[in-house]
Amino acid sequence: MRLRHLLLPLLLAACSHKPPATDWTPAHWGMMPSEVLSAVHDTAPASGGRLVTGATAKLRLDAAAVAGTTLPADFYFLDDRLVQVMFSDSQYHDNAESRKTLEHLAAQLRKQYGPETLGQAMDPAAGLSHEATWAAGDTEIILSASPVTATTSTVSVIYRRKSA
Image (cartoon, rainbow, N blue to C red):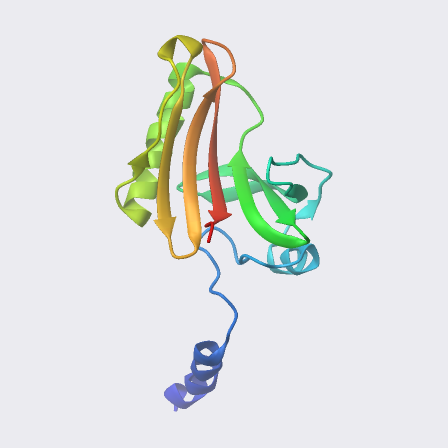
């Protein structure tokens, strides 16, 4: 009897042409800001930063779960379509603390997506620098640490739509 009640939802889900939600949010690439506002609880409008691609942060989530931790998230849109979500603490941390966060996030992302591809690090004299990427379907995941000073840095996790 219960199986019969599950068949219609399963059939509708299988026939849906909507891309699947990612593991970090019920949003998916190509959503408009109003759709993300409806799908992701507690998002709020933001007059945020702008990426070199021209994408603009139009929504913000003060606390979002990602890779076993909680960070603020900015939702970036290009031509009113979601193209990137950046999880990053706006506070600078000493390099030892940032390295601990970086190692924790990398371990969690490895569990989810397998081994990473390492990017080119900056000169260690500039401070903590690291970049690693993973791919999952139409999503590229980037974990990075960027030096602010020689002794402080920021860590971010970026989910973005993979380039064609």
